[in-house]
Length: 318
Image 1 (cartoon, rainbow, N blue to C red):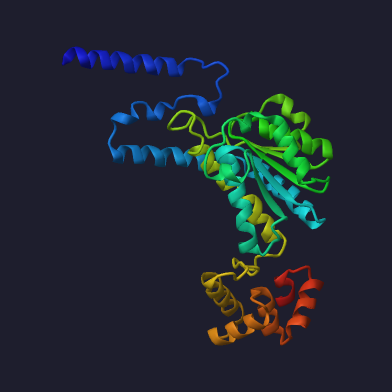
Image 2: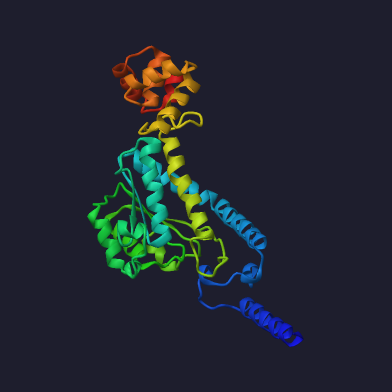
């Protein structure tokens, strides 16, 4: 029994020593995390606590990139204002998160599906299961960009936690050749050569994962936080939010219809019946219904007023 204890202790010390020694060119996302050594020997509560502590590091890493995120949002807003589009491109978890964020924009902000698009290595089938090898093909990434006919007015956000996914690199290079604005989101210090074809970098350095190499954890959390801000803040600056209400919500199901009614009530002060009736006249558009009620206009007149003010409800109400 005592011998087994000493063998365990010796092994643990050896692991600690190896982890504290330089790990050469191994990416941070692939290195082993000192906080989760022997995690398989810990209780469920202890493991949950490790997750909490590591997730806080992801949040802190994103906060440290606040200026870089704000600059990226400026680039997106400027592109949207001249009719440009935003593309996310990634493989695996990174690709899925990009597709997720893009797919949420139409129902939340009534954007066209073309305005924000997600591209994942392997295509839509890769959303549900891994498509082995696709992420290693840089030409496939470049091809995906050509197929979507990017222009110099568009923005491409390449997402690769490790900073090296060939599919993403191919897409970034192709977008750069076309003249589009290129942004690279990764969780390590990016290779120096990327500066040749990347306009702007966002690099939340989350450190090694709890399970070595599993970038769906901290890196995935950081990525989701950044993407949340890129689209949401952009839409706020495009007038698709009034106060903290999603006044451009597309009422496509019962939940969103009920939300639209509450939004119209909150801004105008009318009762639910009046809000619902006006929403029907406004074809379910909460912002249009609000203008109709507050200005005493029909839907055509209210629509023209919104058009005059670029869709900014506050300019009309104030």
